[in-house]
Amino acid sequence: MRILITNDDSVSASQLLPLIRWCQQLGEVTTVVPAFEQSGKSHSIELHKPFTVGQRELSPGITVHTVDSSPADCVRYALFGLGLEFDLVISGINRGFNIGTDVMYSGTVAAIFEAALLGIPAVAFSTSPGYYEQAVTHLDQILEYIRQNRLMDIHSLYNINIPPEPKSILITRQGGAYYSDDFHINDGLCTPCGKCVFVPSGDLTLDTDAVMEGYISITPLTIVRTHMDIFRKLTEQK
Image (cartoon, rainbow, N blue to C red):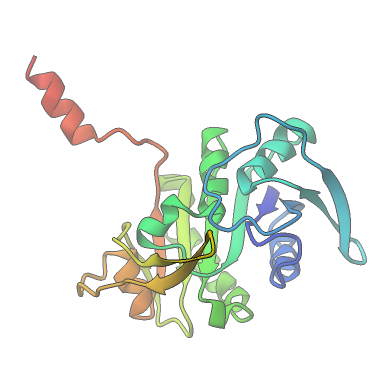
């Protein structure tokens, strides 16, 4: 299996090397990551100016490619710049959950959306900042669940979130608001200050509630933005 690893926390992310080493048991690994943190950059790509690319040795025998652009551009560079082909894209492990409506902003999730647009199966991993160093220890459990339930045969695009000391794994759907900002304005400068806005619903089919209740959440995603129920309703009226 040919695996591409990327993230939005950059080449400096402390869990990048453990993720690479874990993925090496699955196949041939190529890593292309942002040179600098790209959190919240969503599915942006650079269209108007060149961006710097390079390489960095993380450990003896492990060299990664760096891109001074977004996670989506990392995927694009791996395919169009390096001319490589992949069987799977793994994005993460993100330092911070990507649940609910936060997936709209996430550079981590955008990388797997870009992979899907290019026809490559993809999975995003995220966890709590406070559990960042331990999250990689649950990847074997998640891999076994994916294999036993043949998830990649059923669908090709998943968002996975790992809470601290997880109870078990649940298949979920996208929940509502989890994170927002207060804007503090001073002397012409606006500083966003993040805050949790999660309101529990008790519905463990939602990724927000499942993760907040201590379950690993696996959510199948889609790149299609058309509201199919409304589309059918509107076209049936004619």
